[in-house]
Image (cartoon, rainbow, N blue to C red; front, top):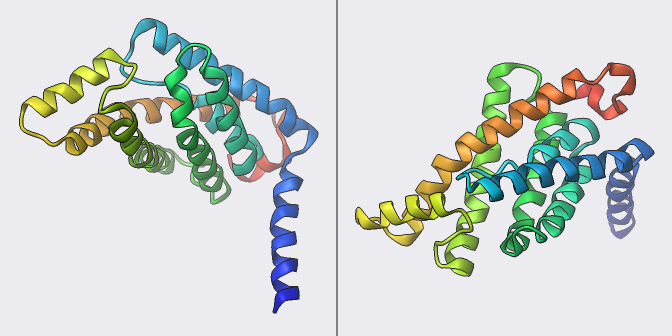
Amino acid sequence: MADSTTQAEGGFFSRIAADFTTRAWVLIPIGVGINFVGGTLVTVLKLPIFLDTIGTILVALLAGPWVAALTGLITNLVLVISDPTLIAYAPVNVAIGLIAGYLALWGWFKTYPKIVASGLIIMLTGVILSAPIVVLAFGGVTSSPSRSALTAFFLATGGSIWQSVFTTGVIVEIVDKLISVFVAVFVARAIPERYRPQKAQQTL
């Protein structure tokens, strides 16, 4: 039993390591760069959305979940430059990379209905993981004034802090993640097949 477990674990880690090809390593800084531009633009313009996961989702489509997860982690470490609070949300970006990557492997980005469904799944992932961070670490306030104002509105109407943050998250994230997913799919499909990593052949 121990030997079979060891072999299974070895196979699991070997499959993860196999995803990190030369092309995958090249894609990581590209994905981080796209996330950084999107996230910084949103911070400067004080928009209620994020746009800091487009690169993560793009890498998920092209190179798989684990490469995307690393892209998400590095993204939040880099975004600290423009907004130090974003380091707290690193687990969210990592989880989005994993979810998007596995959805891609299961063929959820091949048709428009499934693309929309993928966006909603990724949205729920972001909301469920980020709400406790917003409430417990920041008392319901985020670096986005418009998002904080929306949370304050729901609090004023009688909602609890958890209800208000969660409701705000759904409203904001559904727009953010659908935009992010469709942009990532558009960019991935625009890349000529001969230049796509082998992983992308089964995801698009």
